[in-house]
Length: 220
Image (tube, rainbow, N blue to C red; front, side):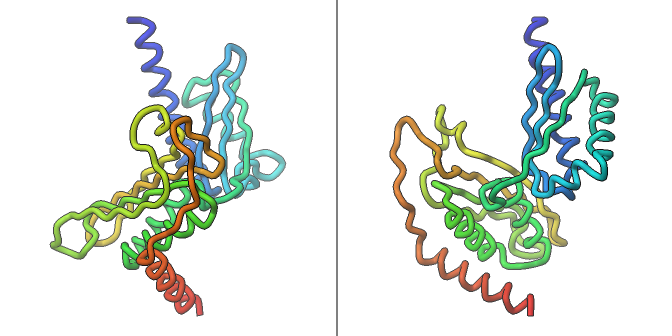
């Protein structure tokens, strides 16, 4: 039982540390974190869109972050490395946050999902799925669920571990809306299937085009 308790405690510690980093590095465009514990050090690699904000002037920000992790989480000798996100449209957490911001601004949820799905697939993803659930319609309406998807997206078994997943909640004035994004990045090799080029349905292309036009009008 002692071994099981250690694994559970370690998993809880990793979750709390990841949640802390997500909150602290939100303005730096936090995407994900990889934590590797060794007998000597704990390596923490964070992926963000703005590495400079994590490092800070003369490395002060990253030093303060390291000290806070060591003090608040009891991590011995933490070593933080920073990686820059190469393509924001292939990172589920960043995509979900973008959808959440648009939803909170009051834009049409269905159009947002269609436009975002097209953006993901245009970036080279082999498959993607976006689900929005909650008070989507208006005040007093029942909660509902909208889903858009394209390409190959395994839902069970070992291949499903290759799918990147993130969940973020939007808080518009009518009630909370959960947004879940799943992405299969380009170059992913599945042992049971050969992926093929994806042709998006016409309805998604048209909705995405309308969303682009609306964005152009708002920017002018």
